[in-house]
Amino acid sequence: MALPSELGEYLRACRARVTAEQAGLPVTGHRRVPGLRREELAMLAGVSVDYVIRLEQGRLRSASPAVLGALARALRLRPDEEEYLMRCAADAGSAAARARSAAPRRQRVSAATQLLLDSMTGVPALVMGRRMDVLAWNALAAALITDFGAVPAERRNHIRLTFLDPGVRGMYTDWERVARECVAYLRMDAGRYPDDPELARLIGELSMKDADFGRWWSDHRVRAPRSGRKGFVHAVAGELSLDFQVLDVRGAADQMMLVYTAEPGSRSAEALAFLAGWADTPRPARQR
Image (cartoon, rainbow, N blue to C red):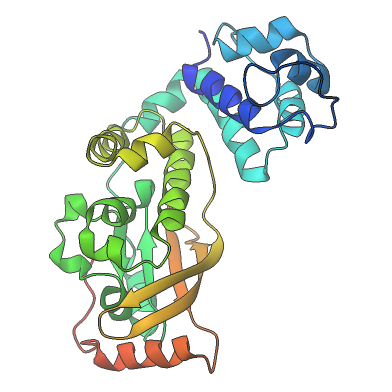
């Protein structure tokens, strides 16, 4: 069984992003393409040029973790990018794993997790599952981002809202940075579940409806959601600069909690407290 084209495409994309200077190689002559040449990558990773060619063309039955690790180091990949590289190769040799990934079960949060969300009255928080589907949220998250309960369940996806919902898209002060990160998160999820039909439909819809998504998707950037900062312009609370953290929900496969916080004493903390008072907090948050 040949390795899928995704591995080869990802290797080529990563190779194009690393310059000879970054790799500590001398630059001589005219370079027709950006990034490392196959010969240079092979030398840095300690493999043959023919091996790199066959790997990029999907003509190998397997690729050892040692070789993939050497390629990752030569390509200067971050840990999450290396994880994606390993997964692309591993999925090719496991028909059972690919069959499981093609039939994901419907996800729901536990009653305890929903209770935790509802008790977090001072911070916006939501739980996302595969494909960054929004599974549950608290009242302040709905007040900050959108009324998730009014969004049909099949369209209740964080990335879809970021690209296709004008209200959500317009509230980010740096929408392009947020959207690029969303694409990288989705690409990471695609590495875990390459045959998920719902994921394929989401990617297809976004590619058709937003040219930016299609262009950024072809860049093969991957990233695991962890932490950062986002700027918002809210119709009621005004401007907010909020830190976010992504936490795994232990005991629930493929579920993560996204929590926004503001620096104590800051203008954003005041705005968030105002938004919490404005929100209809007595109404219980809903889930899928």
